[in-house]
Length: 138
Image 1 (cartoon, rainbow, N blue to C red):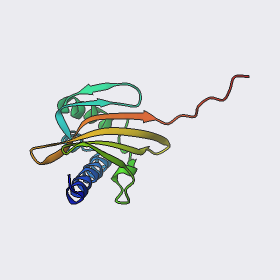
Image 2 (spheres, helix red, strand yellow):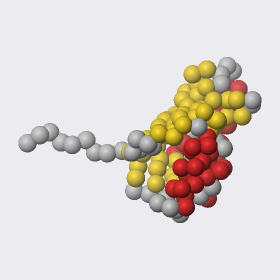
Image 3 (cartoon, rainbow, N blue to C red):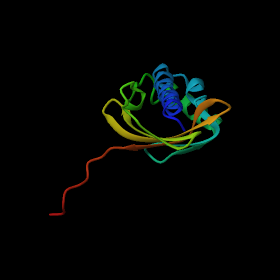
Image 4 (cartoon, rainbow, N blue to C red):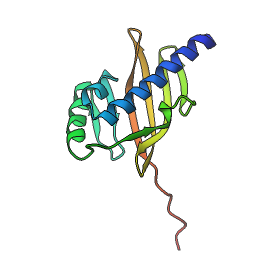
């Protein structure tokens, strides 16, 4: 893969992350779910698993209308300053590692992005809440 092609693909992956942040911040479950493959796996910070775009949309429709209504997502991966680590495992597969989350709820998020029919989408999502490691026992 040439540096030029990799750079273009990396920009597409960053754009995908920008679109994710925009869809979340707009509370748009349809636009949010459209960023995922038809058979994507989505694991939340509390261990809930959604399988497939339809389930991702359904769960986010509930969340955006209820417990997470009006929340804003920050995502270093969406930054143009290279705030995400993007590693290409194959020409059409990228592993993305990012920091982000809701206000006061810092997380580390890993994604697998895949190119299908010239469009990049997420095939997997794993969100892990950052927590302090307890000190030594007393």
